Length: 307
Image 1: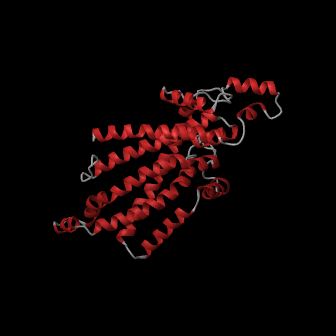
Image 2: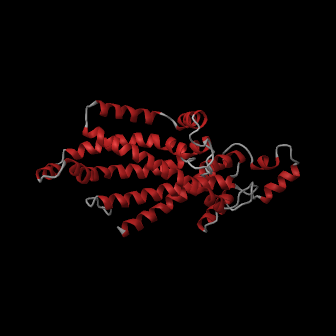
Image 3: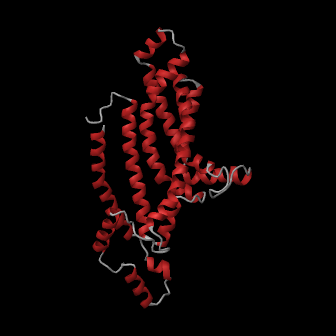
């Protein structure tokens, strides 16, 4: 496993370089000028030229790219064009909020998906199975930008059960976490049902029943543990997607995370912050995928990572 981990990490280096390069060039293709965002369009030409020289924006694009990549390799993501703060510090201040939100979303998704998927599999073809799969279809179909405001209007404005925005008040994480976790719960419940149906037909379950084990023990100790293996994979992939998909949800609920920071940086044409946000999301995604592979191999000894 150690050799596999080292190979995967080495393989990630060119991927991260490609991501860094593509992000750099795509960000610079965004319409607008950061100088205009800082000084305004009515600023004097001399002031604009001086600021562009100060920010090194008048250098050729390839020189800027090489300078940025060299900084990334040395752990320096540059400074914000607008606030002059180090990008690394800005990201460290915002990342815990996004991670907190993503973890809550996963907990809510698993809390809903695992029991629903198991019950749907055990009651295959019943009204409970059809109702659960209908709910899963609705959950997948509802986009975050629609579900978020709907939950806010109902539970924050009408019922006043939860805070409407921000992260300071108790319970403020619940609505954005439900918004993020709904689609994940729908997808995971369908996968859990399918995986559980495959496991229920295995010979070792019949052997366990023949030994006199109770049905609850057969399902909980033998069937459920083996059915969770595919779910671990999808949860790992979805966790990386949550880090990127939280952008809209964070904006709706004014959650002070990476998503809100990224949108703000795009509006200001703050190139270093935009690049830092996307690079952080990419790194988080690939690292979580690696950890998911390692965890899957740990849960299922039949998986050979070196193969």
